[in-house]
Image (cartoon, rainbow, N blue to C red; front, side, top):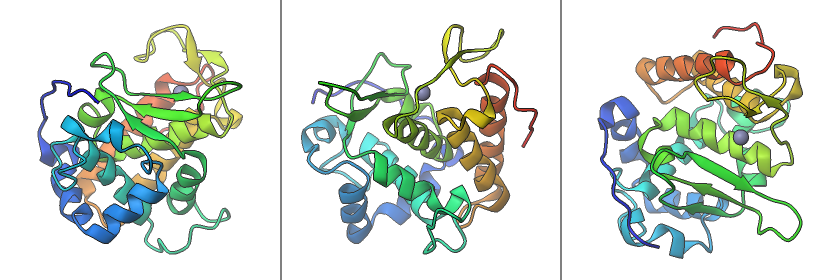
Length: 227
Ligand SMILES: [Zn+2]
């Protein structure tokens, strides 16, 4: 892969300084590489993307690993990922089960991520610079859940509400009850705010803000909730 140019925002604010030391542990790196869809995609994660530098949280690969660590360990009882537990527990399992091909690309600079699936399509999720450098660590976990929901077969089914920060036209979910990609991401952020472990109150507050942004802007019919 080619290298792309980017600047690295404050790593205390994004949580990369908090999570970075946790991922710098070979057994975790091997685990994350193998279960979260990186495996087989070295060509998409080398050069400027960090394959040779997996502990360096200024690079895309480590910033993705930070989100994987958050997904893996943020439930207080993280060894329980049964479907009957909260999404804080099973979110990682849903992501692992649904994303088996995770690739890094530059994108257009502001794009976050995209999910590709269907007949004659190589099912995959692509992560772009916006994922690595405009989203904080909880927000990256939200994106992984969002895209995994698409890989799980759920598309967006509505237009954004008027005035949405996400723009206009298609790409929204009709309602909370549709159980779509936006709902999965927002529900995860809500639980992370309410009960996230091995993190800080600052990270949990950022998750709350992002969750409310999604609730207010990504559903054609406002869910009526506020985190
Ligand atoms: Zn989507």
